Image (cartoon, rainbow, N blue to C red; front, side, top):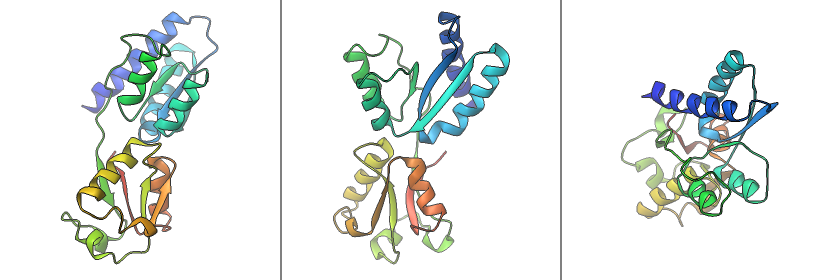
Length: 188
């Protein structure tokens, strides 16, 4: 399945290169959860084609706002379908160019095994300092975390303990660095 995603992305880059033979650089913005994969693909693409690929990582919401305000990006790999769809409707993306390149999964993660359970008891008990999530206003993974917490009836209760990253990558870093005991992160 991962190979299929890489192949789809590679085909997109090849199509861009063919259409922009004179392009010095292909500018790719990517949701932070897919950054490592796209950098690997971009490196292989550069070696094979001699085209330079600039990869800019961040939250889907931030990239959407930049494109809406005229940022000169060539490819947008979002973490949701909503933002690319809006760009197409606004005439800021090529009609029919959207496709699903991957399906993300969100998980509650901690490097401490005592904070890992499948029934959300660790969240309900609240025996932790901070819970990391991506900003729900900017990042689809943040919205997904918000939905989970609301469904569990914990969204309001845990507000004072939440640390919000601009994107899912930053939310992961908060947990990895110990600034949050656990957090909602991308499974990838």
